[in-house]
Length: 472
Image 1 (cartoon, rainbow, N blue to C red):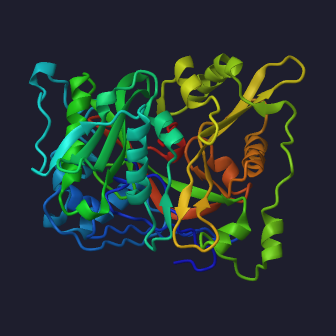
Image 2: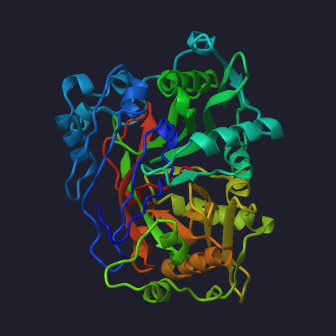
C-alpha cells in the first residue's frame, strides 16, 4: 500500500458492484512514479465467486507490474485451484480464458438467438420468503425505496469510510433512456413486510462493435441488502434480468466488474484529480505526499477562477444536433462504442442539475460548435466523520476536441467542476483520456475496472484507448 497518497474511494463496478465485494484504490502523489502493483481482493463475504457459484474462495492477491489483460487472466487462473475457477461463467456464453489464443474462433455472437417462444416465460424461483417486483422509478415512493436500498447497501470501501450515494434524480436519469423497458428494473421484496431488499437493472443500448451495430442491454445496479448476502440471491437475479432481456429479443449485454472474470474485453484504470485537497485529506480520502505541506498541496492543485477557452459555455438544447455530429464522428475511432443519435444525446449529454454537466465551445467568429466536454455527478456518503457527510465527485463522461486542445478543454472542465463545488474529478483511461491525465495532475489508482460483453466474442483484448464506452 502507498501511504503517501491513499485514495480509498471505490468506483462503479457495474454488474457485481453491490454484492459485498469491495476494492481499495491507492494513488501515488501526482509528482511521483505511478504504482505498478495490481491488487485484486475477492473476500469470502459476498465475493463474486460466492455470489455466482457454490464454493468458498479465499482471498486472492496478485502482485505484478504492467500486466496485460490476458497475462493477468492467466495469473488468476494459475493461482486458483480447479475447484475455485469460475464455474458459473464457464457455463455462460462469454469469452473464456482458454480461448484467448484460439485464432480459429470467429468474432461476434457466441450463441445464436433462440425463438422468443423458447425463452423461459416465468420468472426464476426465489426462496419462499421473497418475491419479484418491477420497480417503477417514475413513482416517487418506489424511487425513494430504491435510493434507500442503494444508499445503505451499495458499494463502499474496505474500511467503511465511503459509500456511493446515487441521487434519486441520477437513478431516474440512468434508468429512463429512450426506449427503456420498465420490466428490466427488477426488485426483490420480502413477502410479509414488502420491504425492498435487492435490485438489478438493465437498459437498452445500441453498441457499435467495429462496423456492426448490436442491440444490447447495459446491466447495472446489482444490490443485495447486507443482511441477505448469504441467501444467494445475486445469481438468480442475474439469470432473471437475462431472461427479461431475451424476451425483448436482445441477446447481448455490456457490464463491468472490479475483478477478472471470463473474459474482459479490456481493463481500465481510474485516475483522480483533487479539486478540494484539504477536504479530501481531512476525510481520509487522500493524504499529504512526502515533504508536502498543506499550503504547497493547495498551491499544486489550484485552478484558475474561470474557464480560459473563448466560447466555452454550458450546453443548451439547441446544441444537440451539433454535439451529436461531433460525438458520432469521434466515437468511430474506437472498436467498441455506443451508437448515439440525437435523442440519446439529448437524454445522456444535455445538462441536468446535480446529475450531468456538459459544456460546448462555440466559435466566436462563426458560432460553430467545435468541442464539448461532460461529466456526471456521483457523490459518496462519508461514514462516521464529525464534520463532512458527502464527498462530491465528478466523473469524466464523453469529451470531443476538434479545435481546442484536449488538455485545455479538460482543464476548463476541471475549472467548471471546481466552480460547482466538486471535491474530486475522476476519469478512466479510455478513449483519448490518457493524453491529459498526467499533465492535469491526476493521480493513478491501482485498481482496475474490467469491461465485459455477454454473448459476444472479440478476437483480441482491447487497449483502454480503443474503448469508447463509459458505463455509469
